[in-house]
Length: 262
Image (cartoon, rainbow, N blue to C red):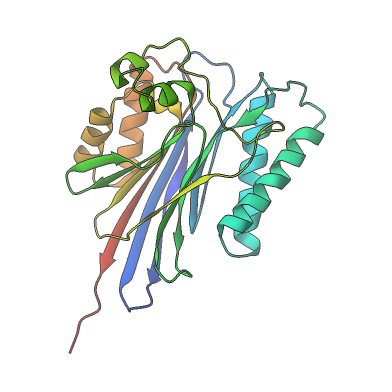
């Protein structure tokens, strides 16, 4: 059974007076072939992230949990900025290294997500990414992957040596080139995205994208307007399609309302 976190919401006011209503839902599941869930996630306004741990039975759980805990502490104590994110990730790496049950040198975690930045000159969403978990955006009837995987197959695709179709079953499909871990740099990629009415974000571990195509993700979003229904429907489909890995999904809906003018 999946482990849900209840739907939550937040209303914020932009500098120009527009209001933005956010509604979100997160869910995670061990899947049907793994003994433990090494995924973790955080839904703490203004930050929404998923971490997919790796490095042994216990190591992956330590890495993802440490990363999410440090980011959660950052949200509680101050502003979400690239500098503060990277400081939190550096502390997470120290936690991973010093943990008594961390024994595998390959221990680490992916990290992906978005945060709402209202302090910049351009109020916007900012995506965060290290590894091969993903952020998708459904805007109108167009679904786009906002993050770029840090993986061997993505590098091969970018070099024109592999097609996306060939990448789906490539033997190096699980090999990532960047992670939050003892031997890795902890600088994420950041991308700014305008705040638009009707936008819907999907933040997920690769346990979802192994089982659902982009078309499938868009289908379940379209069929389920509310975040909880959409996340639960995608989770059920991922499990029915095999559930070969841990699966974690956050669905975040955005409603923007303009201030009436006289």
